[in-house]
Structure formats: C-alpha cells, structure tokens
Length: 252
Ligand code: MF3
Ligand code: CO
Image (cartoon, rainbow, N blue to C red; front, side, top):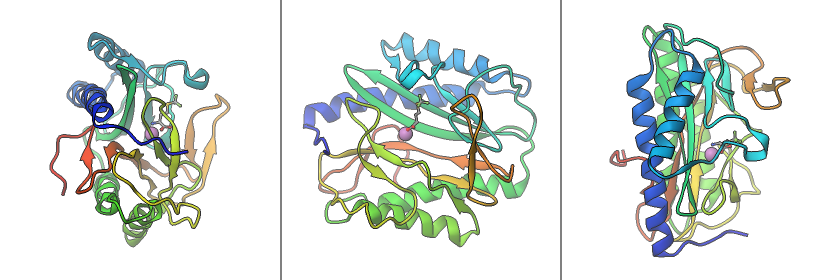
C-alpha cells in the first residue's frame, strides 16, 4: 500500500530531509585521509541528535550504527568501524534521520584525494543516473519509467546496475511501498501520483553487477571487487517537477 502524504506531511519531510542534507554536507567537509569510518559515524550521529532528530538506521532491523559507510568495493550497508580512509578511496555515506515522525534518506559518494579518473567518472555517472531517473518522477509516469532511465544511463557507460537492492517509498517509515528498482522491472507498474514520497537510489558498479554479502549480515560488496557508487535523495512527487527533500541543488 502506497501512503500518500498531505501538504503538512511534506513540510515535516522537508525538515527531516534538511537534517539529512546538512549531515551529508558536514561529512563532506570533515572527511580526511587517515580518519576511520567510526569517526565519521560519530560526527553524523552527533549532528543528527543536535538537531533533535534520531539516526533512523541505528537499531533498524538490528543495524548497529547511526549511518552506513561503504568504501570502494562496498556497495551499501558498510558498518562504520576501524577501517581508515585512504587516499584515492570513494566513500558512500548513507544517512537517514527521523524528525517529527518522518524520515529523510540520502546518500553521497565522496572522492577522497587522488581518485583515478575512471572511478571519478563512475561517481559522476551514478549521480547523473539519479537525475535522469527523476525526469520521470511526475504523475502520469510509472515507477518503472524512473527505473528504466537509470538503467539506460548506467549501461550506456558500460556499468553494472545492482538488482538485489532498490529504492523505496519513505515517510513515517524508512521503507514503504513502492519498491523503486534501478533497472526495468515489469512489476514496477505503479503510477506516480502527487503526494508520494520515494527514495531514488542508483547503486552502480564499475565492473560486473553481482554482489556478495559479508558474514556480518550487512555489508554488501561487489563480487569482482571493483568499485561501486551510490547516490540517493528522498523526493516528493507533485503535479509538476518533484521536490528534492534532501538536496538543495537545482534539478539538472
Ligand atoms: N538508505 C538505506 C536503505 O534504504 C538505509 C539502510 S539503514 C540500515 O536501505 F539500517 F538498514 F542499514
Ligand atoms: Co534508501
């Protein structure tokens, strides 16, 4: 069942989304070679709580930390810990915050120091995939139109599109209906409608698209060990262009 949000709900989601965006901006300014992912987690958690919000991932289905940090070959759900950020790493920070009963969810992949040109390109194209997808985030289109646009853009660069994880509805809960795949799926037939709020989150691999889950029960890596990038925003469908609830950038 897809929950349609009222205008007041959307205002609350803007506030939650702003906490998420500001956390990501802070992480981007703070990230340094030699820092551990645990230190970044601490910065994010302290900031989220300072805004009167709660880090939604913490204890979500038993997840142990405030945010997810996924370095290089880790696609998503990396658990912050003693891993030190190295020169040339790409670091995806996936931040969720709950404020006044509503959730914001967004991810940025940061390039640290001397990242090879071809890996930078992966990060750039992953972000482009999001903006290609949301061209179809309007009433009249189906969820699968977003999916197809993301897939087409990624594959035109020879990249892989992860199948096992998808975007999702978001609202009072972190994960609501509908699923928003990053590849064309005939099941994603739902028509988009004003008041729907969804997280669109391309997860794109430089090599093959197959993934692997580590024994910690969370960390997802590429099977071939090649890098992956992730970019995500929570958006609200309106009668016109979508509102980006976790991103102040102009729609490209
Ligand atoms: N943005 C992630 C997702 O949509 C959030 C994961 S929180 C976790 O799946 F607790 F499950 F890690
Ligand atoms: Co998400």
